[in-house]
Image 1 (cartoon, rainbow, N blue to C red):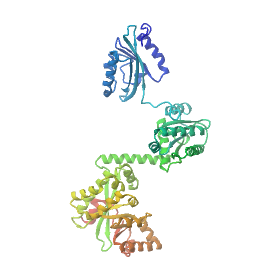
Image 2 (cartoon, helix red, strand yellow):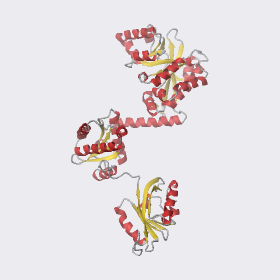
Image 3 (cartoon, rainbow, N blue to C red):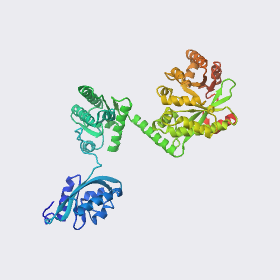
Image 4 (cartoon, rainbow, N blue to C red):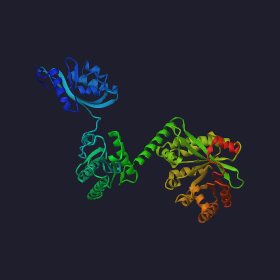
Length: 555
């Protein structure tokens, strides 16, 4: 761009840009190509790791605040501008923020020439492209930054009002099946359904991906948000019908009443809305959930336990322990085996129930490394016991996650070899036997274990709806009667008669049977009369550490 250099001097443009700066989100700059001087509006100095608003030796100085990996690209582009090869500068790269973290920017500039076509200045602007957009062109709604601003203006202390976070269920699958173009169409239409359902003092924003937030700053009761959700859901159902069911989709919602909670900042509030929506989806989708502090506390506790478990696994399984409970032959009361039971204490020393931490191990995948640790240590204990009890067996519980996601058969065989133990020294139990029915991969592992003489046990018999079917499909070696069923049988004549027939049936097809939950001599006498093969329960021993187990049985 050629212009009158006397008017557009470096100093004049610097003064003009500083006047415009308060009116803009971008950072304006002027680069004097002749004196090698750079000016940027004062706001940028607070945001980025700049030496000041004015500096010299421009290219080299950029090397001090540009992300190192991006500097060669910038240097090449500026050299092309300085040599006259380029009239414009337009580059996306990273500057270092005032805290040293990288910040993505788009730097644009235009060269100004004097009357002799000599480049004298480059003027332009820098904007942060990592920031969320103020508004969303797909849905037509304002973006998350507008929500933040509006809340600061209308309810800065978060003392009242209602929030509902809405999400389209399984939107990723919808995009994969029908393409992003149709996905964007759905976003726009769902946004219209939300917008058209709003009343006075209600505002809608698109937060991220397929999620929206409705803010109500009136004094309406929380129940009004429930009505709004169902109104929007009905509109979405009609939309699906109007599109002749090309795609089936639903919406879930999470509602928060600000008067019922205490939050310290906006970011914390967004986390609560995220939790509320996730809870609605976890409970089956296509429904609304009202935020409950007690539920959130459970969520935080679960997240803390997950973090502790991950830390413990990384720290050589610190905090994990194995307890062993004896399985006794009912004929002669000799030690037959021991069931291995996992225990856990957090780094703070708090004991966590297996019913709480084992599902977290499974959900997180940590059950795989923990499972290998269990097998190694259980077989080590078994090898020591066999020095006194040559036919002793150890029983371990396997999660279906382990069977699905790790080479379980190979790992078991390798561990047996390392401890010089025969396969018949091991019993494997799977509580969630229902998962076996529909998984050929798991059934394949099951068959391979049986073929090498590892004993297979169905645990918790009497608690599942398909136990009899599992016996037929899986052909186990051992069936374990769950303690809850044993207790009922000891207290109820009908249940006791049922237990008699179950034991007879199990024996008639050549399987062994363990009765769990025996705690007193009277219970032992009554159950032993039914001729089960093995007894397990507190009467003989509670689960205990290896050293205590060895002491009780003279190992």
